[in-house]
Length: 211
Length: 217
Image (cartoon, rainbow over the protein chains, first blue to last red):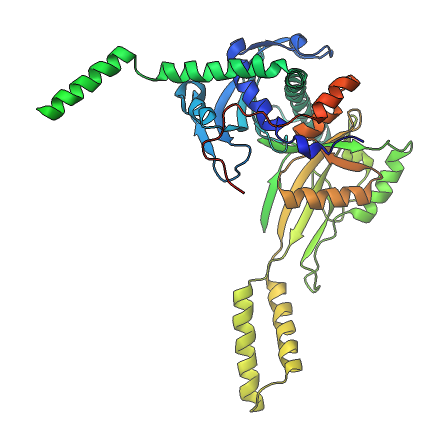
């Protein structure tokens, strides 16, 4: 008899946390064929990066959470501090850039839902000639927008499958998790002032206090 | 009228993913049209007592209450596109209480004695009826798109009560079951060898770091 899927609800936050570091490791440049053998209609190579919002909370605590927003949240160090404090990613804003189109959206770890999905295309603000037949226009709209969701979902699902494939092996703790911890400590260290500078600052402060 | 809409045709999108369990009937168009006729949205009548109503409407025209739900309107290239509409009337409780109190006082002056419990109840019902006629329903309209090829459904909204109400209505209307596609659900659906499946089922949370503000139970 198979297990109740809700017992694996922790996989959502774990996946988004893994994805945060995986994108950094890959420099944001991904190839769909690396993650899935599925034939797709979109471009194989694309750029995927962290958007402007991340919400982190520990798996056990519902009330304590940290929301980081801004243009480059991955450079701020606040996300790394939250990781260091034992939080995992609860919702993450992502951007997928193809050559002509960009999708921006938020993935929610708890229920797998997607929010704030936007399709950005060049010349999108130019007035579009209205189709005389409203039904045809509606149908074209639905097909276009649902294809965009299909593409984004396929990418997220393929990455999730990759994560699950790694997660079930014992090596996950010694490789992926160890790499993530190293990224956190290195990232946090790089945000701190250099040791010599720190020492000089401390000496100056002491002298100022004595004076 | 207050109108809350989350659209499939325009604007920013937010949605919840579902897996649809069950096979599509061979004559699905006829079956679905007949089922939707029964579960279509019926507006709240101003003289009625109901304070909520829910059902399916056309996504393109959610307020066209007399428009029939035909496959020519809801079938888009392998996808069923509809909207779930829920109208609710919220009576202002504090105002009702005050009004009932005032009417009972008036009755007391008129009769010259304390009105009976039966009279008080009748006054309360009359006040509710009077106020209900003056309150306009709040409409919630959430689009949905069911992809027959992938057996997946997207409900363009989030929220626990919305999902519960929608799932119930969907399963009453169509001969299928809905399963919310969470990451956990998705993991269980991945095609893995038997050994890996066992490993997946026995997974326990793996924290990156021990939380420093763990909540004690």
